Image (cartoon, rainbow, N blue to C red; front, side):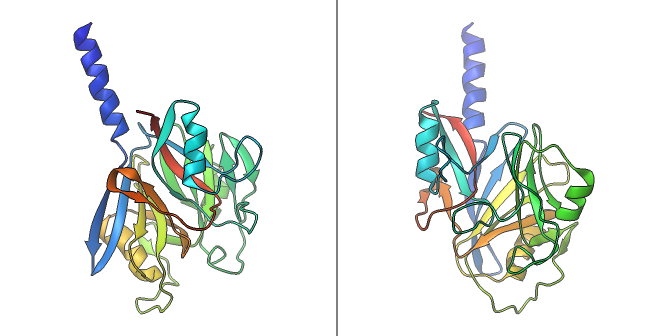
Length: 244
């Protein structure tokens, strides 16, 4: 019995620490990288509270989770949203579609095709280009559409220029081919799209990556002392663990 309890304690500790964040430097730019394992981590999206009001802040999500004996070990904003915090594109939470897929081009970064969908299933997470997503129709438990894609099948988005002058703090997510890792990244300084995408492709070696946002990018990673503040957010992605 004591051995079984010890094993369960070790496994529990490992699960709590599974979402790990670190700061990396690539080509003179600094990034914070949070590596998650969808097969074992409880990776979820959050938008509205029980009253239908947007959470807006990481702290509001934590307040809701605390009532269930849980907390966030990591979180970041997870897709573009309107002024009322409603998602611009496809959004699914707990298997319920709250916003349809937007497959056509449009204004702004979201409409800079190809864009994509971050899809969380029971045993994997994937970044999927939007038209491929529509064709394959995966059953996502959680999903958030954003854009543009950063990396598509190992290639940087064709519209990105190495000397692009649009520079912001940016955040996004990349996934492995087998869906066993979802890697979330936020730049710690101003970077252009090409530099940000190249970090996912060339340094992290991820074949698919999706842009979440720029300028409003925020990270919650208490293990490394990050609790970013700022304007209210729309969709939030995070890893849920038992509260200590």
